[in-house]
Length: 359
Image 1 (cartoon, rainbow, N blue to C red):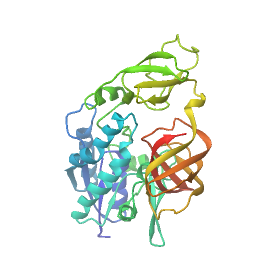
Image 2: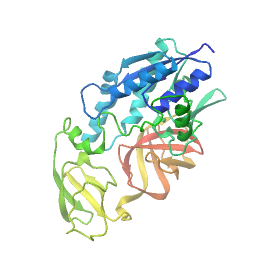
Image 3: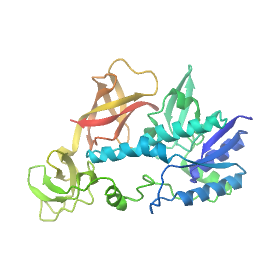
Image 4: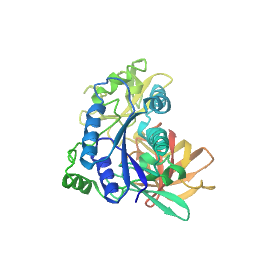
């Protein structure tokens, strides 16, 4: 093959094996390292990742370019991220980053260079049938990333390849080791680059959102502590609440049950099985369908309200162009406004939406 495929090379093992597989298949492979965050944030390892990417490309005898998409990231991902946290919601920047940077800015850049396809190290699969492209789950259930890709459409899927979508992580690392790639045992990246580990989360958000401490209140209305700012907490959170042993039963942990945004109060409940932590349904907006949008309510489908959650049986009701309600067969723990609810029919991801309310 002489067709040029440009790989989004992160310096990790997944994108490295992606490039290796495509080269072995006979494609003309080129690689691009994307820098999406400016600054000297101590939690971002972009310089180390670039060195790994360069080493891999040297070993595979592949050209590597570096491109800066930090402006696109800031305007189309990061501003939304901060706005959502300021509203007391919990956004998922990885979903937007895929749409706005990896499968828009990078895709356009790659095609300007002459690519016929782009490729990434996502654990997902693309199937073409009857002139339509479908997004399928990755073979490795523990690594499936279709949840983060539901905002892609026909244009993006038709121009993309996911070469490791039909193999598992163990095999990916084995391919890398057998190929002599230095990063075969490199730890998977977690979270968002500019945040780093969770312990730095509060420190990071303080740079962008004014801190507004307030009271912590039990579901029964009793004051039991103080919070550092509603933006720091998410539904179902257990750690970091700082509620002393003098409240409730000592053996039962506390969880975030709700946020009273008007009064700046964090509402908590004790015990993982507390009814206030579970809801049968949600309202969502900003719906996106990968294929043709359904015209009626959908029965007997499944959904995820968070990454790596098992599929949950549900139905979609009150469907309009931008909004819907999702009713689950079983109550769901910690449905979180700002997160994505992603819809599936068997192994196929059909779309998703942003959670607005739960009931």
